[in-house]
Length: 150
Length: 104
Image (tube, rainbow over all chains, first blue to last red; front, side, top):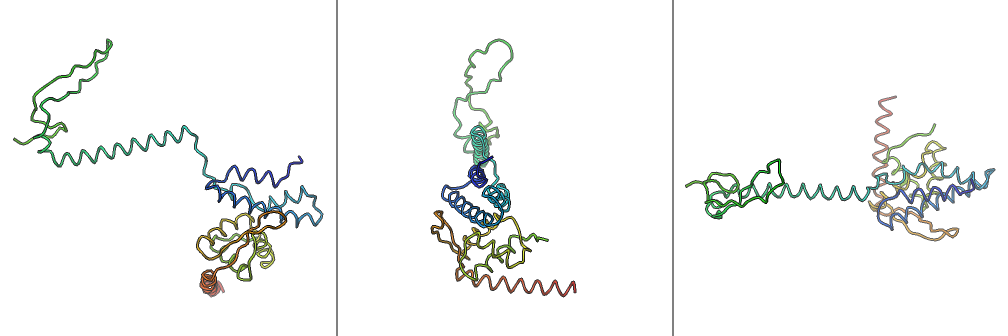
């Protein structure tokens, strides 16, 4: 085990640190200077260079206490989070549009298209035949399910 | 027995050390340990987040030079920091006086 305890510590800290590059670089520089200064002081006594570095690292404290410990998200997790955000935002947007259209229901009814496409529920069983488009005259219900006033 | 201090206490002590003149991180730790007779012997790395908070608040400022071939950041108190330290020290003394009166 001849690996420098300080270098090992700095490598671990570098892996765990989060944030902008210059902030990370600054922190690493400060910690490196601190540990080397502390090890130099300890080495003046009876400790070997390796033991002095190990003691300096021990006094400095665990890496997790220094670095931000927020776990790094995998690419798949990031994509999932983006999708969830899009779905939630879409739902909120849709709800807002529905509220707006609901408030303006009479005008929507008045401007309803003469031909409406009806949703045909899927039937279990044989392969699906392309769903037919069913035309109908405007009814007394708006596309949003609200009753139109005559 | 080493004491555990809150973040605010640590920041007040850091300001107290820097009131005596600029210092780098390790120098601040040594000063804290010496001046408290070893009472405040906390994990040395914990002072850096506190120093960065103080700098962000404008109470201290830092500059970098080269020492032993490595970059070394030195911290110094600002005018704002001097004023803030005086206020915090007064509050701390009031608090200690109150606690002493209660537990005496």
